Image (cartoon, rainbow, N blue to C red; front, side, top):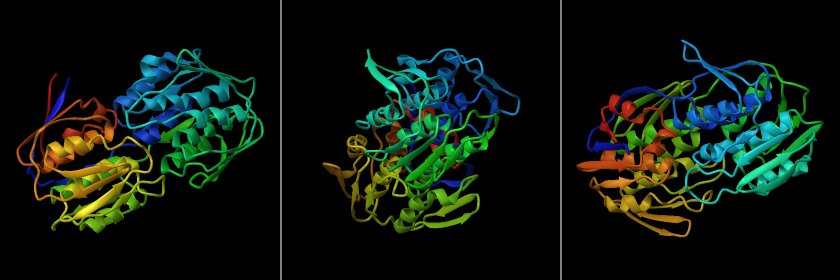
Length: 418
């Protein structure tokens, strides 16, 4: 199993480009099967989750072609298999996103119950209950969701809790349904807006994306088109956190600062000097880190996907802080590894109580999920001595060439072979 070796103590300096967003790309790729025309994708990140989604679509009969300009063309006109098998779904929870699209266009789907990161219970009952309101017949059989519908009908749906994938799934299901669908208590994340913008560009009628009430009027068919995947706000936030920890000075290009505001505001409180343009963010850190309390919330609140990174920041701050995880109930598994490196953190329920320390020491640590992987890499960058991060297959699911980008900024980091 591959590992990352990090020698801490280097100050990050320079500039990098932000990659395309995984969390935007996956639902948009799933939505491409709603059209029988060719759709071309640009700025897709080179990630394991993207590869898994392509493998899933290919297993259904979707034709995928990569051209010389690194753009992918996706043609679903020959789709003939409506099953997402367990071998693929178990590694990537986002596979559930093909459920709404398959039901919406073909009236049938067989999807293995999803896996992915072990960060807590993420039930799909919101998806299934809402699809039943639209007329789907759903049963669970041998670990699979088996869904059928002669034709989905518009419905007025109120989610029992905010769910990003549930909102995305129901948007896809409603696009070709009869009549009008209203989604209340919908997720407001930028990636939901990206999905709606893409679908509207190929003929859908979606209003209200980015608010908690989304209205979809069903259309008869969708056309083909082009889609440029927006930048990854969590990747950008992670590198900004790395610069904060190493007292660095970096610029991230090809990123929308407006999508990072809830992250940038916290970094400013930590003492970072941040400047933005329309497509870049620059950060310089010249002082000790101020502690900052964090409460994760659905967008526009502070993103749960940045909680682990700020746990490290607070652990190296000059005071005490509290991080409250309100989204997932099991997302502090990185803490025990940070404690092994010398961090002073205690967990009580959904709260992490952190007392900053002056220094931490490198150690051999094990990643438990995607963002925990990033957190441990950040810790290694500022630790004294050598850190080995094991089980880095998690990091490859969500960060494109992370060791190359960090090396370019001056980090001493290498990937060790199996």
